[in-house]
Structures are given as structure tokens and as C-alpha cells.
Figure 1 (tube, rainbow, N blue to C red):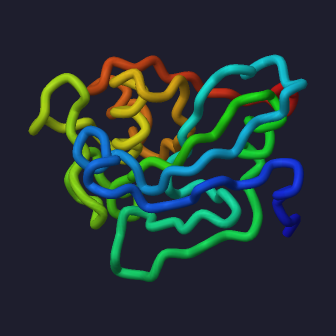
Figure 2: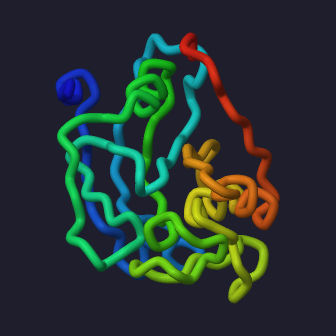
Figure 3: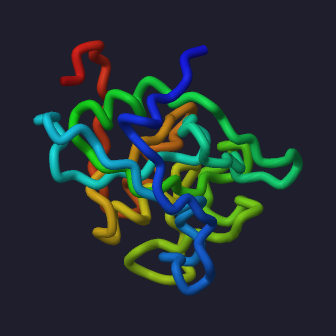
Length: 171
């Protein structure tokens, strides 16, 4: 497994947000900054959050559960590397529902994610945190994973457009 290029893409200020730093209840799993390639064109100037089931080296992953301890990968998922190569800044990981197995937004052991338009209402799931952050205008793009509606449901609940990218030539 390839190790992340942390010299080219250093990870800055990785931390679990305090209550005061949270948005829409508990949308953030971790906040940090990884600055994208300044020569990247496709996503230059865009901010991205990544669902908490996609590997980002040095960032603990909860998978929305407390049934197992958080896992800290030492490599980046390909989509993370390509996003950085394309010029985007990754600003954090977003909460997902318990083992990505719910279309609600209250099953994550890390806390409930509220709809960005109506507190107390569902943001959908399982990519609840990412959809709330995009729908609420705090990030430009959320990268998630869809097994049975995990992007489609929260996108529709939070007023987002989802795009499926099936290309090996992202940039």
C-alpha cells in the first residue's frame, strides 16, 4: 500500500472539533487542512470535505460507530490524492452514519447531524455530515460513497446536486 505524500501535501491542525467548532449539530468528524496542488486547475480554489469512511492519512476514522476503536490510515485513498492533485484544499472529514448503514442522520456515535435548513430535521444519510456542510455553504464539495442511497438521500434532503465520476482522468 503506498504511503501518503505528506511532504507534498502536509496535514495541518488535525483535531476533533469542540462543540463550538461544530456545524449543524455534529457534521465534522475532524477538521484539518491539506492544501491542494497550486498548479492543479480543475478544482483550484475549491474546499472539500471527505466522508469519514474514506482514507485520509494521519486522520482517525470513526465510521460513525463506537463499536470499534478509531482507525488511523497511513495512506490516502486514490480520490483524496487526485482531489489534491487537481488543486482542491481538503478541510476535514465529515460524519457518516453508523457503519454507513442508515439513511437517517442520528445513528452516528459521534452525534446527530441536523439539516442545514431546519435544525432538528434529518440531513439524510449515510453521508449526512458532508451533505449538510455543502447544503449549508461551508464547503464547495463533499466526497462520499453510495451503497444504497448514501449520497442520493442526503443530497436530496440538503438541497445538493450529486455527481458520479467514473473517470481515470480526473485532471
